[in-house]
Length: 205
Image (cartoon, rainbow, N blue to C red):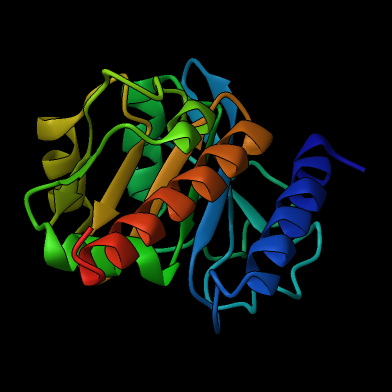
């Protein structure tokens, strides 16, 4: 089994986990891990497949712009259309893994706070890598676009090294970390934080 297939097995397991949580409905969402830095290479899930049914072969090796490279086990596979944004995020942040899901809470939170979702004084922020108190965390929100260069440029303009997440309005959320496990833990904590924020606002808290 190749290194790409081994990474594909882990990506498939993570995708199945998110699908079971209802965060990768239909064929939505995509995950990636960095395979090399010089030049930047990522292994990303394929386009158009049910993310709960991926195999280790349902991945593509892409360059920094999200374009499939020719020298790989399955060059015929089509990478996610959003692979280019994964590349921009990995390049800017130094992350080893990027997770993109369509959980509802981030999209609803961005609808209420289109210039950025502010979080503070919540214990779960520690699981997101920030302090529970005396630390104002703003999750960036950018407009949706089908052009990955536009999304990438907008992300880069507002990138903050201490905030490993990005909400794309009316679309979904990207979270990253050193590896898939850290990215998952950050995403799970952030989804809770955003859901709390929505419910607290609805109750007037």
